[in-house]
Picture: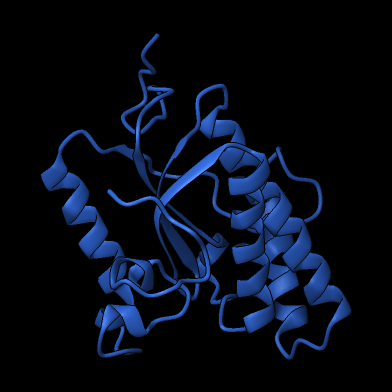
Length: 183
């Protein structure tokens, strides 16, 4: 049965472009330890949760992914578990490790949680994923180009493959942080 929402994961075999961001677009991923939690969590989802990853790019406050669920797995469940786990791990790391912005960021996460009945103490990620199913090769190439060029557009690197937290390295024939399937 097709979902009536304009952006929904309604094809269990579909390949999707998804984006999700931290609440208030807080620049959390300026610290390596938080980026590494995301990378390790994606790797776990690939190995244990049935995630097929085609492309990814982690920015300071959001992540872009092109992905699908393997047969027998549910993409919505994978994304829910990924977001829940990364949120709890990053918040715990932030509470335990020296973080100069800790009080301010945790306060913002608390404020976001107060506005959302699904959360009790902190809300890390925004609720939506804005999934867009990739139906055509042209649309997939467009999203892949957009995703990989994010760090270039921000002026962080000159070439997409120079950015470590992205699959652009894989597409350039180099080893990336994560294994990806190619679109």
